[in-house]
Length: 175
Ligand SMILES: [Fe+2]
Ligand SMILES: [Fe+2]
Image (cartoon, rainbow, N blue to C red; front, side, top):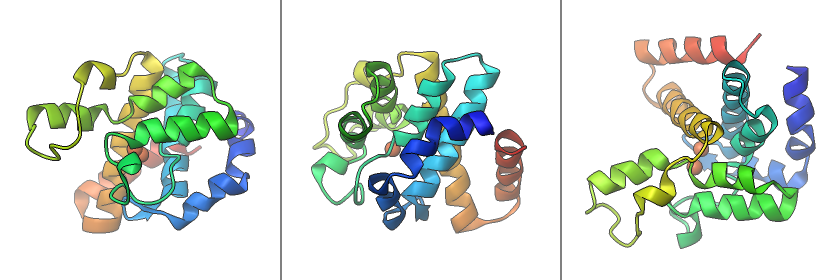
């Protein structure tokens, strides 16, 4: 995992990123969630011969916003990808490609909102804008979905399915 830590070390040691330890997210904290997603994104990028640095960096910064998603409009389910991309650009000077990966990481929610439009009517949904535009963006989107399910089950329900997810997550991310 040396290559992984070479990519993320500058960000994860920065105080502005470490601030995220204070934010509760999927029953854990945002800092731990982001590390999990970036580790899984890194592994999947290696396996699929994708852009490893960009996938890992975008995975690490995909939820780089402060506070809860219900706290303000900029943090909402559909807006926080844009807020995170803006913060990541300002603070860590990420590339446009990495920024685009972050902006589409909530595609599953965009899709859900399109199918069930009466939920959260105040938020405008555009399926075309929310769709991942690269292999790397699909990796981060799916890694976030998988890790979120794992965290939700691990910290909430427990049981057999959580054990399977925990096993799969560890097999993929640990060596
Ligand atoms: Fe997110
Ligand atoms: Fe996330």
